[in-house]
Image (cartoon, rainbow, N blue to C red; front, side):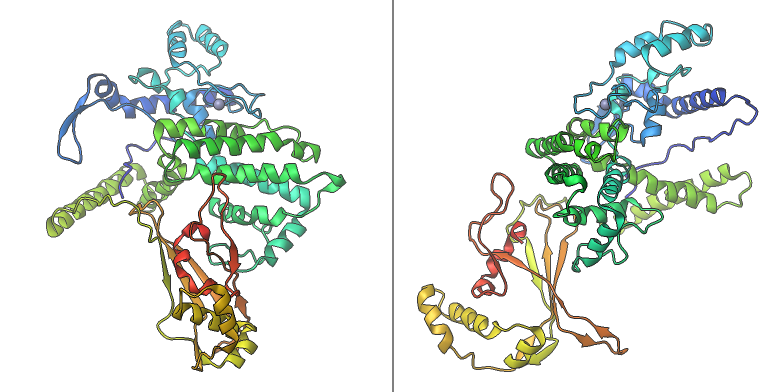
Length: 531
Ligand SMILES: [Zn+2]
């Protein structure tokens, strides 16, 4: 959607003329900060003095654009903030990263003041010693030193891709594999029944050579189910382990919510507290010696960053990693590999010009787009779809035989009695069921129901959640291959005032579709949570 614009390619210089590794590292850090200063120089005057900007409603306002957020992975965050990779980019020293204590960002004013004490060019030795004293690397001129109102230690944001999906989730899965053994977890993941929204790991979860963030997310959906009921070695109780895993998974999902309230942010803190309160089980099991690593520590900063800068999808590096393909790899492959930079820039400028012109043509042809409707979320979240024509027409006996639905006749009779006489009391209709004759046969059989659930918050850009329920007998495909039977379990909450209670649990009486009455109340399917 062209929400992000590429401003510059930064050089990756090998600096082969330098002998010592430490001088190479220092020089490449200085080079990075010098380049960033050059790229962001327009913000120095604009941030301090302001510039006129036109917003979407056509009004011109005086704005002060500043560096607000710096999204990057941990090595990039350390490079930008000039701190060691074993520390928190915001402030916590190395050695304390496994503790569940608040981490306060460094005071940017103190750092800026300290950087002015010695001139790095005139007194480089004194400058380096002074920087070491205040806990940052002696970078010649950190680029943020010149930016008005910038606080780089506050601007460092959470990164769901590297800290959660490729970070804590990856650790958690490997700790559980060490606890229970890969064989057991693989076996359990193969045994799980098929489900439309859950990937089925037919070869287990341990056979991957390289796992992507998306695959980690798929494993997380089944992770708690894989370990429930498994005994721990040396007679350890599994309570702490389950609480720790659940805490981390709750945090993972809450951290990715598309909108937040004070309540959801409090829930995030509670989930993280639960992990920290129970994480010692991994030490007791001798899987870890400590938890002193930056990715775990970074989770402490999520709620405050969400309050400052909005939900985590605003600064997830998943987007910039994706843009690296579009704007760097694709651009490079469009060149003849000789003196490629000017060719890449020309390619990029042409692509942007085409995109702008495309927007203009659309706008002129389609006229002004209607303003987005701000409709309140409706109660009709759910749509149920079945095929236009049934898969087969069958008698009661065949349905009973092929689908194993031995109570089907009684259930249908019961449903029809209630459908015809909804006022009738259950005791009276129960008496009528054995005498009831449906009076028609064969019956149309549908083997699949699709349930589409609209976004509960009514966001127009959000996709519907699709769920599919199968009731398929064993059959043969045209190729002669045997298709095995598949019967999904559906829980329907028939309580009219059903909904989560204050603890988030689901209230109401669960009934399976196999029981009488439940088919007769499709209105309860309208509550997405109760499904
Ligand atoms: Zn920190």
